[in-house]
Length: 401
Image (tube, rainbow, N blue to C red; front, side):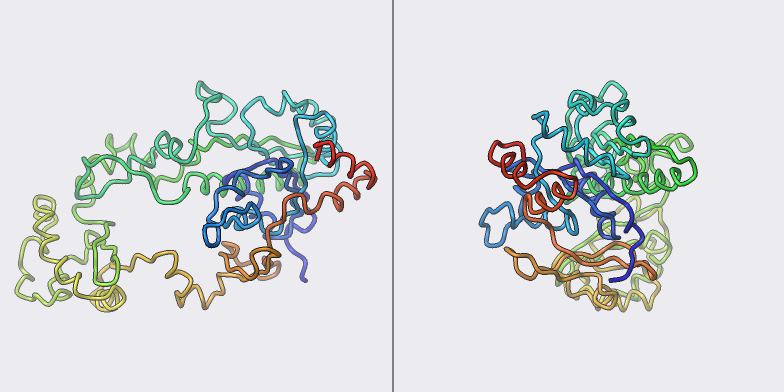
């Protein structure tokens, strides 16, 4: 196995759910030793999220947990017990990074304040991930993917361009969580680079609300200059339509003719007599009658398959593209050619395919791996840090680990 870019990095993972585990997953994919601390008996809350094969609930078979925790080592520690906090303190002596997702102030109440952590390990980087960050009037509020998407501004954008007054909706999946995990990973890498020069540790304060607000395609940055939101007044900038999806015979097709290819649409839909129609030559006409525009193109699209539509549209320099489902991604020739999906073996799930690393490093490639069984590495990790097998057994019996 080749050396990986983070092979010498050790991370203690005190996160659960999605955002924090995705951050540490990106590190473990490229070789970091990530020790995941879980609650005894229950483990990470994502073990309860599923999906589960055949809908049979089993904390070791959760698809969400598996994806987010590949290549990590799991230990169980009860942080409500002083012995459990003592275990974490000993581990932190040799760690490069602590990633945690407790509510602001919780680490201090556990006896792991910023001062204590600095005394334990002056070179430690502490990445704290929370809904609103450590400061501000919202800092003690609880939130989830839904509320973060709303407060961060993303939900306001999730309306059709031709129906800007429709009520906002949420994006599919957990996009607020995943974007927070990705940006937390980037910020932590930056802190590691900074430590190489300074030699000292650092703290990284991540807010899910802010992570959402920084990934809105420039909408927030543009507002002070334009005085309006692209979604509340979408036609004022681009005309209609741009970036919306309509049904076709075998699914959905995404259209962006507002970019400039609209005059060729009559050729796509086999209606050359419409080449001079204002709906295809003037953006103002489409803005005034978007329903009439849809009425001309959707009947043709509904009788054709998305990839055939795309091939013909590309010849006409139209920005049309298929909308692929999760299942279709597994058979997509582009992703197959790049070997994006990796197959690994799990003692309870058997062979399972999942998305691989989001980047390909030529000299230090990512390696596929499995997610750990709850507490799988208790004896290995705690033994390495000087605890005896007798202590480990007693702690397990008394609920400390």
